[in-house]
Image 1 (cartoon, rainbow, N blue to C red):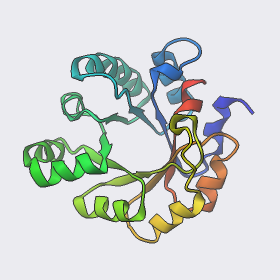
Image 2 (cartoon, one colour):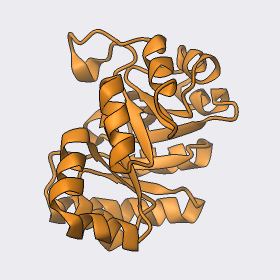
Image 3 (cartoon, helix red, strand yellow):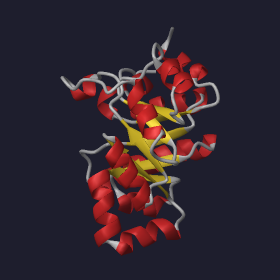
Image 4 (cartoon, rainbow, N blue to C red):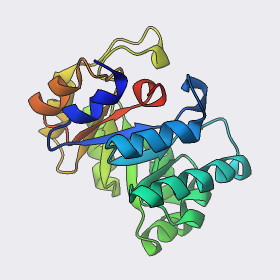
Amino acid sequence: MENRDIFKLKGNKKIIAVTNRYLVKQGSLYNAVEKCCRLGADYIMVREKDLEYRELLKIAIKIKKITDEFCTPLIINGNLKAAVELKVFGFHTGIEKFKNMVENNKEDLGLLKAENIKKGVSIHSVSEAIEAEKLGADYVMAGNIFETSCKVGLKGRGLKFIDDIGNSIGIPIIAIGGINSLNIQSVLLNTKAAGAAIMSQAMSI
């Protein structure tokens, strides 16, 4: 099964293709994003954590032109300023940064609400998922589900982790971590996950 076939396995669930320019094997990052949009990605998440605002913005502007062409919603990970400036679909961050935003930076939170930008939060435990929902997250991204080269030595939390979260919160759960064409159906068809996020496979399409 080829990498591109992963989008045929999602059923009625969603797939978020997450960017990482260092994982692109052929062509450019923009080629990879275009392929994901064309093949059926439901969302694109720009996740280039090593870049500061200006560098990230340049990349995000080019990616948004592609996602707009395919009417694919765009999510910016980790850079609120870029997310607000580009008026993207969603902004994603970690639980601690989100908590700090909600508790200490009402101005940033107000910007998200004013632009109607969805708020996603990465979590690694049931308690963090519950906290994220209480703080106002629109969805959580839970991981890592399987072992992944992105987190060497960190054991996967498994499918039960998704259902434990699903039994504790009412907002959508996106599974992440080591998800590929061989295991994505076990995630999407057999758990409470609303969708899955893929990075390595998305960038090597």
